[in-house]
Length: 60
Image (tube, rainbow, N blue to C red; front, side, top):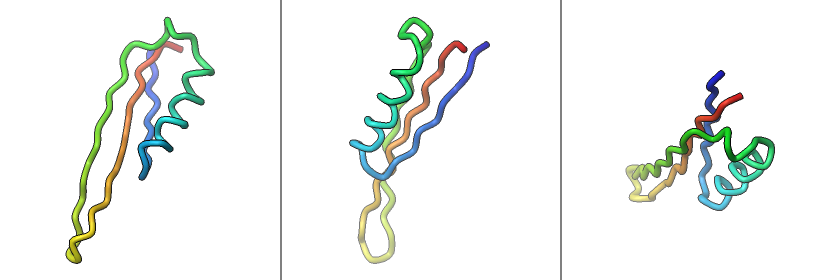
């Protein structure tokens, strides 16, 4: 069965840590693909907020 696991963090280091913890629990041969995205959102005051996300597609 194909499954997905979604990760969403404010800091890239947090995303890396969460993904590594998950990947330790599954076999490397079960990983089908990993998608990565960074979004930048600016508010009215000019402050920038980053959103780091990733999707792991794997066999369960």
